[in-house]
Length: 111
Image 1 (cartoon, helix red, strand yellow):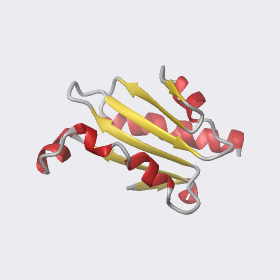
Image 2: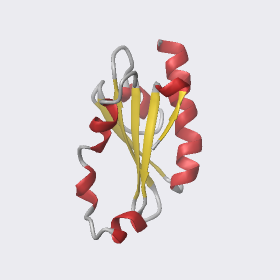
Image 3: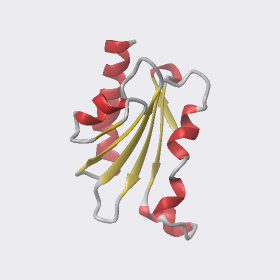
């Protein structure tokens, strides 16, 4: 688990090796992005999941007034205002370096 913006942004990453280490299937993380939102003071929570093809899937949750769908749309994704997702065609570390600054910008612009 990592955070930025004084704990207003939190994120976690799950790699294929993490899933293999505990013999889990990819669907076992379904509720994790919502659990991250349960942390006091969090406005934006992201789960970065490494796909088998090396791309990174991002599941984003947002508290009001932030718009998860608008943030994910910047990366070709979409969904709902409070829960959205996108796929970044890059490894998980690079995806975090690209996506987290976008979340920080959303805090500055909408907060």
